[in-house]
Image (cartoon, rainbow, N blue to C red; front, side, top):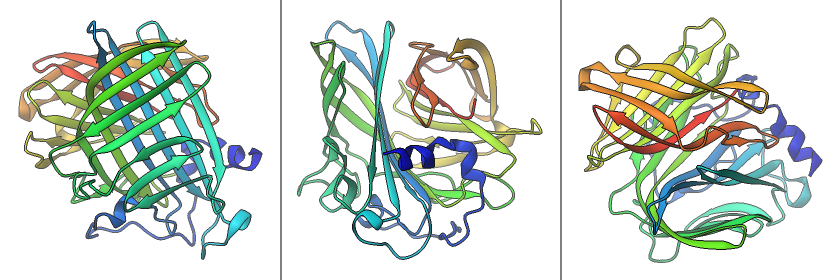
Length: 343
């Protein structure tokens, strides 16, 4: 699938290119479920993105990722078969303190090799799938089953939740720059995960917490933005926190966040109240990456230090980035995931 690889290899910086002909992201959208769990082909790019912080029966930490990306090569009505302009890419990974494994798949739209159905929910690429059933609650997007495999790992999980999905940003409108770049963005941060993980033919039972992000846009970055640093945090109190910092070429990075209460209510956190400071670096894949962070939100008396389970959690895919499980301590403690793009 060389065509797919070329389209995605432009990386996150390509998301700042002009997106003429695609649908714009504007404030005031009324989200509708299950429809918005499905694809939005009028927009240029979107993803179904799940990370899980797990432990095995001995209490050893591990993490996994399952992601399906859709990108349109051009705007306009959808064509049939191999002429379809949708490209699909899947990423799967498992991470322990001693190893990080990943795999990548590509598919062309229009031929059934990859896609997403809104009801019953199903997202798939080849034999990887995130799948619901007739009993899946559309508001919660649960229960689901999840599976992926590679030559040296595979996993299968069941995902349960008892609270609805959470709209990020301003009622699901997630601003990315002062010049109008934005996305539609919601999450299910309340998944409880249980299943099995196989690495080098050794199977372990795992359980823990998972977080799913749904995001779609036509131009989520400004041309002056090079990438982002994103965190999803499960606090031991039951609260959840999403933070990201969009890096700009002039050094005036722009942070955003949402604090999610245990009952599912979300409260925006604005840039003036967010301090994201790199504290530790790792040399990975010829890059210097900020894998340890100090995060402060003064209005909430929140100050933590985040450390990675495995500093070498580089996704050496055609669409490369760092993604791995973290733990944090300080005024609050817990676990989460860190993503670093554009380095």
